[in-house]
Amino acid sequence: MENMIKADKLTFYYEQSKDGIKDINFNIKAGEVILLAGDSGSGKSTLLKCLNGLIPETVEGSLEGSLFFEDKKYTELKMFELNKHIGSVFQNPRSQFFTTNSTAELVFPMENYGYAKEEMDERLTALTEKFSLHPLLNRNIFEISSGERQLLALASALALNQKAVIFDEPSANLDYGNAMRLGKIIADMKNAGITVIVADHRFYYLSGLIDRVFLVEEGRIKQFDSEEEFKKSTYDTRSFDLFDLELPLPYKSTNVEKIASLKNVIYKDILTGVSLELNKGEVTVLVGNNGVGKTTLAKLLCRTLKPDNGEINCKELPFYIMQDPDFQLFGTSVYNELALVNNNKEKIEETLSYLGLYSYKDKHPFDLSGGQKQRLQIGMAMLCDKPLIIFDEPTSGLDIVSMKKVAKEIVRLKKDAAVIVISHDYEFIRNVANRIIYLKSGNVYEDFELTDNTLCKLNNIFTNMEVEKDEEQF
Image 1: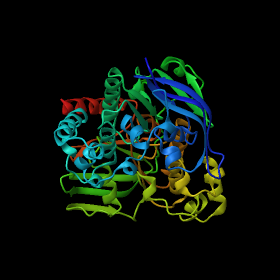
Image 2 (image 1 turned 30 degrees about the vertical axis):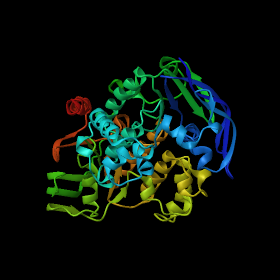
Image 3 (image 1 turned 45 degrees about the vertical axis):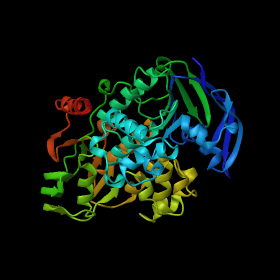
Image 4 (image 1 turned 135 degrees about the vertical axis):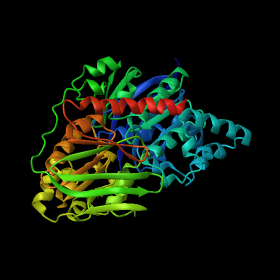
């Protein structure tokens, strides 16, 4: 196999910071699938920004060493030349869109490079079929779900038939079915000789596809020559086989009290008659495919959306932890962000220490990594005093250690509140859920207490999501 991307003593430090990557060396061949693993804030996203050319073009700092694409130095390539061959899917897909219309977004890269209209039409059809995008065509990008935006970003990144594709947390907002479809797409890319570099904390959809693993620890990388070698390492990985996990179920509170309810709630064609009750003392997890209405239901409870019909009763407005942290961070520093929720200095510092954010307390929230922003939001929930707390994908950017800490805190919160969690993260769900609500076709399809006897129901929901997506595709 020919060389695709090579790093020689690559080092980058952000301006006025010691964070970055240090003395990185590797040689990636054409058609290899590389997993970039490591804890939140370890330097994975920084390395990816070097590989796709954003560093040093758009990010200030000190760059040393060399990068090569097909044996040609990055410094000898124009940005447009590099982007024509290396596609990128960012952790937050919203940050890479240039239009507000989904179809316009898909053809935008081709328009930029002067493709003929016939060629664009042909490529658009191919992308639509490959990613099952028919329901997403000609839609307002900001009116579709986060998971659907992620799929749109994936398709856009492949619009030019790139030789290499870089993924930053691609499974973060995807349901199980779409994540497994992504694995099949990556397998097809590998067979076609496309180089794939994936930075992620969830590995199950890549099982059997990984050629090598680059583990990033404090800005340096340790290489593993196979998926099996990585599995045997001391690094605490997420599971490659979700349904083989042996985890005790969270305790069930005896102090259950109704906090909120929905009765025959209808909203557009998304929710068609949802009825349910939410109780203090339990963690209720909403599951379902991307775009089924989970976030819509949360917004209705928060009264940011008004139902077309039905009744919503809630003792007071919930505290809502949004899916995209950037929409919810207003403070001038990490410390100040928490002080907006609760000004008790002792509690703030204790929360920062617990979540591993104390050393970042004076940083601006937007300077944090995606996973660190996620942890900051969890801190806000820990410090609020509300009877209903809603978490929308709270583990989308978290490593396993941080995920377990967040799970522990969410379980603790149910003592004084009803807790709703919207999640596709099976491992996380197993750590927190007392009750599962499965949304499908605009309604509550299943609603059950999670016990040893009903665990098979949860597993079936996840595996059926994969089947449903495959049926949609073909």
